[in-house]
Amino acid sequence: MKLQIDAALCQGHGRCYDLAPELFGDDDEGFGQVLGDGTVPPDKEHEARLAVANCPERAVSLTAVSVPTAVSVPTAVSVPTAVSGQEES
Ligand code: SF4
Image (cartoon, rainbow, N blue to C red; front, side, top):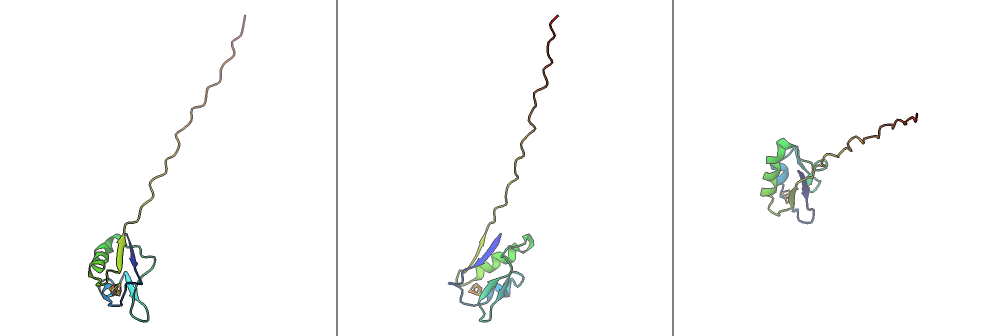
């Protein structure tokens, strides 16, 4: 999960960083800022959702981050066995 704040909507109410100080900070004017790259550790998802639900400007969004699927590895290729020459008698 990843958090984002839409700076055009944020009015600096401060609920996000009050409710989830491990995920949000504030700038010099009190506007909310996502800490780091916004990635939410699994044990902080509740706080992230709380911040989303309590932002009065609906400026906080939480999106799922797609996890790359496993890369398929080609299976072994069969190698033709050597053909033994037939000897004519
Ligand atoms: S709660 Fe919303 S409006 Fe208030 S600082 Fe956080 S993002 Fe900005």
